[in-house]
Length: 434
Ligand code: GLN
Image (tube, rainbow, N blue to C red; front, side, top):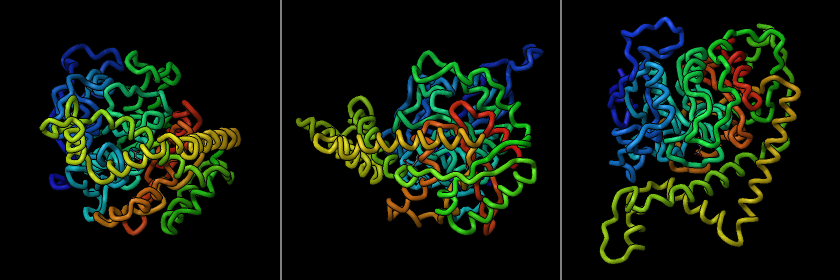
């Protein structure tokens, strides 16, 4: 069905190392036995090219597996391909991919969302049971919402990023995408927990049984409605969101209105920080050690410039330029430092909101999935659709997107945000809906 949706950049398999014929009496030996997984193409796979959706890395073949890939194959899963994505994760529609956009399985003339568009579309189209995405400012939740599946952005530090090709380190996490909350939680169970190769990982949350939390019991739970984020969304989206909230109330949840004073600064702060980190991370792609060669003709500066001119797409270049500017002497305090101050404010605001509610709720995306080709011309428009997802990354909190219903036959996602390492609460509340 989906051969032409452009879900995979590279369709190669990595079989599980586990032997299915061995004794499986130990209950959790192979929790993902027989499951197929699509892996976003910025996560390293040994001997299988890993492009980040970029011409720059068109023929880059990593010499090692990311920790999450090892954990999947150790748990009995088979990886079925490397999923399409916005170039280096920069975008929200998978249209900045050098390999062309991914079509939305629910409406092929529309985008699958992004940047993990291939991952969410693979699950929605039945090309894989499960998928891994990455979320720097919404890239798991956005395509999950647009494709009508479930995605979790874990707390910063819950999942190892060893082997992830970085876009903006202080913001991003690898996380699961699946058709149901329970399957998504099972995948989180397998990938969560400390890794000696990633010093940002924690013990905290490692031994939680996430799948068991998907019990659908919201009785007595307090859900804070993020009214600023609801107001900014399209009418059709709001109406689906409100019905889903009413459903949660009918199941015994209490709701309270929550306002975050800092929220209007989140989007600007996110883009300054993300672009600054990107400009530094992407400096390594010079066509010598990594990236397409610019062809040396006696001048190294020209060689590097040519490699970067040819290898990077428009959006990536725009961000490198803006990020370099924001970090440059004389502007650092005006942009980067200010953005960090706003980030601290957002964190504080979330902490105080989460002292009044168990989880916070908003529409995941303020809009329905746009048509392919509709949003590329106006980068600012593309940044605005991240308004509801980026505050969560600034605050390093966990969030889930679950299908809330449909408008015009298109899926609408509901976002639930929890306290740090409070994945159980968002899984529990989310499972009451999907
Ligand atoms: N759309 C956001 C950006 O372009 C988020 C991307 C992501 O989470 N990788 O930065």
